[in-house]
Length: 270
Image (cartoon, rainbow, N blue to C red; front, side, top):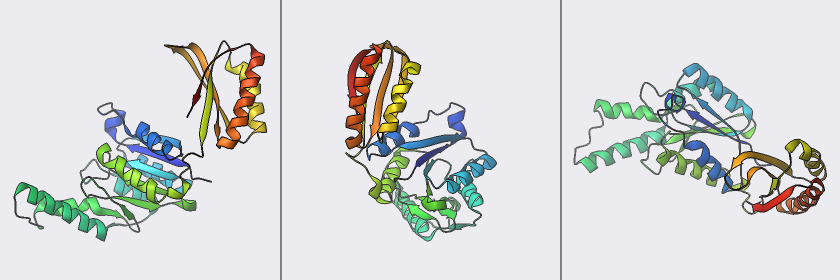
């Protein structure tokens, strides 16, 4: 079975409202494009003890987790240190990260027409962005070369750490999905089919939903709405799973709804 995927978003700026989170909908989109889905998501502020506890749970979960934010080298960036604490490991300068960071600094000096000085205090400080827990693997950053990192967890799981900047984080997440988890991609092997149902209640339809899950290898979902601009109060009722199982389950759902006297709207396929 494909692993469960989780998402951790780190930063006071999200919880205070200074920044609006963009990672959750984008990660859902990136996973869905590969026939995968997000099992859970958490948002955590810049408090070391809470980040450490969250990461400790993530490492122990056996899930594949993406952690966005807090891997820089300013005083409010704690994620690298918390990852090391959660794993009980030392922080060390990753040799490949050191090379990439130096390349980035040389590129910046060249762009500005300046001589590159490796010993300049701000350049020395930048190497802190490559200090990761022992045993970490780097995640390449196509935007500016400054890498993220991966640490393995329990039972085949892992936590992949990327920056909070979407322009960097999203291609890095895509790269991880298309290398480490390509074998789990389920493009064209996962389907959702649903109907708009008006004039009925979820409680009334629950026995039908339970019957379909007992008799078919699918998941049934029910998404009620009370103020849709087109359908008003309605339920989007559907099934999801392997296409071979979804077809007969959906037909049973359609036939079963006829006995409830509900008004059936259009079919939706994803």
